[in-house]
Image 1 (spheres, rainbow, N blue to C red):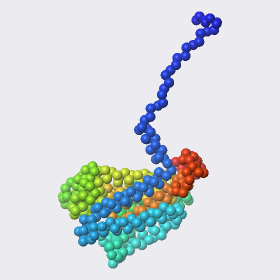
Image 2: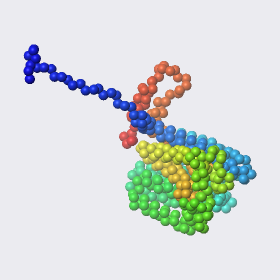
Image 3: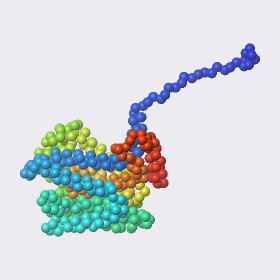
Image 4: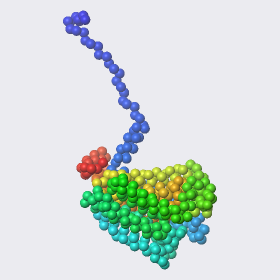
Length: 450
């Protein structure tokens, strides 16, 4: 290569590449990132439980008022009769939820045995002649005077959750759950005692929910597959015997997927008219208060089949909204149970989540014609104070557990009152407050927390 005039080698030409511009902003990716970041925040479960339960309860009050007016008028009662009773129960339940959300975990554990003893006493009192009363063929109610009644079996669900969680937590602390006899005794015998008291009154729907809670606790406790399958087989065998020996339960089983009110020898009037109500609602429904099926065609329109009236008046959009709220509530409960290191909190949160989701699935499945009609209400939504009060107390448990997470405690501790504070005077900026909160949450996080 020839040299230059100065005797130096010629300079190499540098090939300049075009400078790449900034990456294009993807709106979908940005939205996903923001949603993921918000989903992983410490208080997500707290807000989902609190907001989801309140929305379900408020929407349930609206639908109870709409679905119960015709029934009340047919009974020569004011149109708002059932709504006023449900509103009173919701107000009392709100106080119970607030009290439960503020109680420490030790107090929840201390209440386990008194609640169990009270539930067993009331469930036994139902069978005493002159005290217990029968409703729709089931002897599981106690009259409180006037139009007020109580169903003790609903409180049996809360009793089994609290007592079972405390029992399993104490045995886990003593490292006894690896032995099958300590895993089953006395949890399974006490659960079977509650089931026996319920079945004396003929309420198989509540017995199914209690069985689901029992299996949820055993699964959370790490029951071996063989042991779990054995208990499940015994429960399934007992269930088959109880169904085979009852013509009413066999008729309900025959109505699964029925499209005609008279399906053979079975009377499927309620199941079929529930499908009619859902089908006539369309996408956005016929309008609030404009249901046709509640005018005497659909039995139990404001209790067990309130979801059908919701589908008729609010349409597919309304029913999907209810399903989304229950799904969010179930996810938040699973998240609380999975992030804690306290065994009692894990068992109690898992038991409450199993209770609410199983009952919602059984109720909605019956309305859709996918499951037999079990006669259980939709949690927080259907009419019935006996079901609403223990359920709202259980929601308060979940709120208390969600607040007790280390990261959530740190986030709540960083909150300052919005009113009476000078802007920019001595206070941290938003970014500094968030960074400080993250450092405190990291310091408070336990080694096993995910």
